Length: 444
Image (cartoon, rainbow, N blue to C red; front, side, top):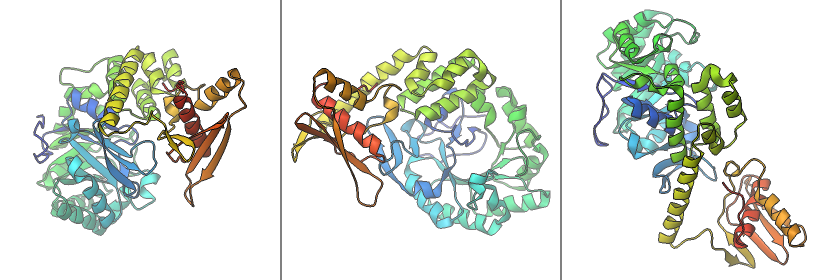
């Protein structure tokens, strides 16, 4: 199978490829980049729901060199991508509405290589809104969604389906899908009632491959895929143009390496580098590592991983704490340089209406489990024989956003950032006070 190494302007070709399948909680940026490094030709993001994406703004993150799609006041993006995957990442959405689908596709169109619609997920979170496998019984809606997307965006459009109980119905459906002008169709070779323990219906995928002229992407073969050579064998068994793999990849992303798979510890270290480089959410990183460990979750190290809360703690388990620290130092220096160029500094307080103010957002994961700015400030006040800090918190209109002012001695301090919770706003105010006083606020 060949690798697509074209530039961002080349149109994604779905033929003769090995692909990372869309996987909820797995297919975030670090996993996608790692799969590409190991040899995947195309990578899909996890299914992202149209309603959620339509609440996002596109933000160019200069600090991480990423494009983030993030909700207002959110700590983490709903979708993050970067130039390294630009011409090989497919954005998969969950939708049941043509117009919403098009709005989402237009939002991400210039930052991804293709758009895919999930029409096969049998899980309730997908089907309850008429999305995923619920669409299989509504071919007219499928036609509307795909036709709207094909006519509305400049990049390739595809969909991912499951097979129907009757072969003739399945063939009729994929021929309808082909008629909309999609670039390819991915087929999970199981009925919507079946689960991974059930054998994949390779014969049905083969019949589909013979019934249409567009590339068919075979999916569902992880039960028979244990090494790179098995990807080619599964492609041949199904007669498909390309192969998409999910579980076999989440267990070991190096399944894509023609040279052979790597030890799990090597894969984890490679994953953690990307997780650190792109500031991946700790909880998400932890989940991915647990899937890689599989049965080893019960080992002493697996139990230590279970107890971790911060990304640095995970790095320490694989002797990468120094790498984490080095990246944080470089990132801090880059942040200060960016702010200097813009004439800004979040570390220099401004006196606003008698209150020392900085734009500081408090993010819990950036602090050790037993450390917080409020605790540090309280202890410092006691050593200085000052009264206990007092907090005044206000709520912003009808929104659930809070801002707090802390009084220490005869001075007042606040952050200009509005937080989603009262306790977060108080921590931010304490952080501003500590920074103004030249004290460390405990941040890792």
